[in-house]
Image (tube, rainbow, N blue to C red; front, side, top):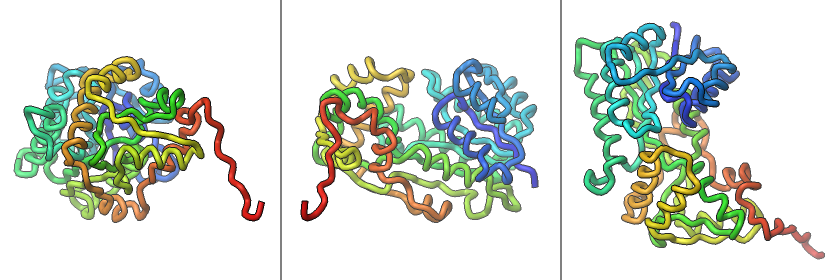
Length: 330
């Protein structure tokens, strides 16, 4: 049974990493073709994934009929639907879902957000809209006119630990992690690589109805394995780097300034981060969810310490040297 996967927003971090993984030795024997839709064909990641073997297709949004034709011409039987980093993210994603329905794509994996179900529409609208998009994807299950409902899967990804790279300048300069999450509540950051690994297993899995029967119909919540306060996160960073690291609970106004100066993300993505931080302050992220990841991949998600070790040079304070281990008896 052939498997041709189309990944949206392939110019973004999540889309690129998922595509890259499907093209790797671990999955290339399970997937016949990978194509990526991109709103920005000239973007660095779009060009790079093309060089790695994916077929890169310009995504021209705004006219549903054209998107339907694009999906048909891609020949995909599985769609990895990632909302793009764009001010019109919601409308573009709705258009993609409706187009996939009309193009009769058999399998769809929607990458959503953990916490969206606990977000309040008036306080965290960017988060809450993920629930509306999930509902639109899952509503195809009861539509006999399309194959899209045969094999839907939703992954609610937790807060990406890579977002902490936004605060690397403060960590490097002052040994501080300035994040507006309050002092009392916890969250469980997840590595983007882990979400990509889970997604790759789903997208490459095959069964009589499309995706593997162990996956199809599943709504999977995937966070990291460690619940942590800001102070505990700074401690984990310090342990990984062998230096002193502290947490600073900053105001939302200051957080906006940090994002404005240090993030190249779209305004909608910055708003998403601020809304997620608000969820943490409200105590709505005090949980971990790793069962689906372990059950499907057979592995455990990465610990935050692993992340800080990988990006040690970005986070290690310039004025501190790595602590030297002293041998017993010295």
